[in-house]
Length: 89
Image (cartoon, rainbow, N blue to C red; front, top):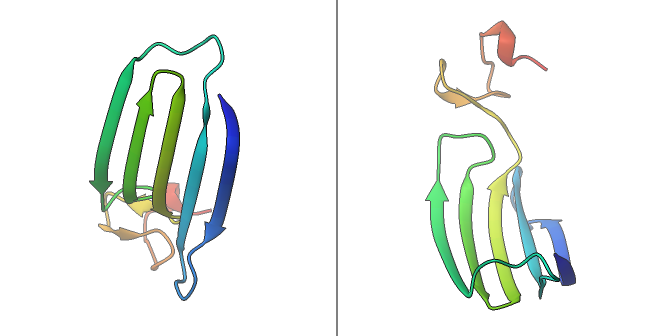
C-alpha cells in the first residue's frame, strides 16, 4: 500500500475518539477489482465506524475508533474500573 494521504488524529471535543483517513494505491500486491466495506462495531476493543472502498489499484479508507479496550467480562471499558486482573495495564 502506498498512501498519498494519511492522517490519524484525535476527534476534537471527544475524550477517547480518533479517526484515520487513508487515500492511496496498491503496487503489485493488489488482488481486488472492486471492494466495499461498511461496518460499525461497539462493545469491542477500539470500537467504531469503518468505511473502505477500493477500485482496481486505488483505495479510500476512513474509520473512527475508540482508543480504549473493552472488558468482555465486566461489559465496560477497561479504564472504567474493570475488576478483572487480566485486563489491567
